[in-house]
Length: 249
Image 1 (cartoon, rainbow, N blue to C red):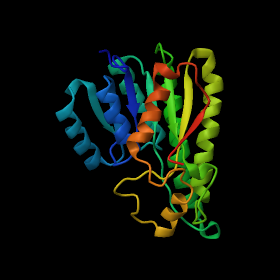
Image 2: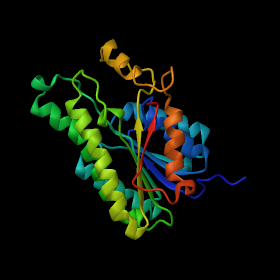
Image 3: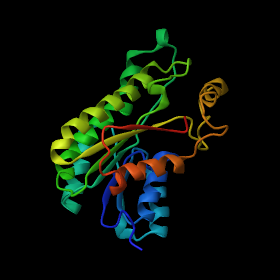
Image 4: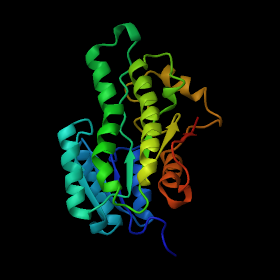
């Protein structure tokens, strides 16, 4: 049986953790794609890359250490992608950073860091990928926003909520501009998605605030978000663009 991502070239950033990016990379590989994974943590990225190469053909997965908010590094990344593959079919922007701080104590440095990491990174990747996506027969961008974009917890999410709301605005603008050249852009809006580092560095009250908003009485899982992302990246959603789909909310 033909996999739905056979002959697809995909790039997934923030892919080497325990969350959504890693789940998406695995699923794309399992369904036939050639995948470029990136992360800013060399040790974590190299370890994940090695594990993937044990499971899938080495030529179908490559890794690059990239700070997703660094314009030069992002541009160099897509130059290499163009030289290697000649095009890009799917871009998955899963980068995000939350630095909880009550609004009056939120520093300009923290604001800038969160905005650059959680919003500017998506802009930089989409802009650098655009010429390569235009060479694809079925180009798609999927951005990962957050439930914080519309319903932040009262524990200091001003910067993160602003950034993730910006991701939705960016997605809709990309969809409008991309329509003329066939580039689709959609977003997923995860609620509480479980991974082993979920509670690191945050108060239990923060996690409980998001658990109180769940439709179902359990935490979401990265693979469940990956299911929706792969739908939005595939031909099954070929007439869907500019949309934001909630998962685990």
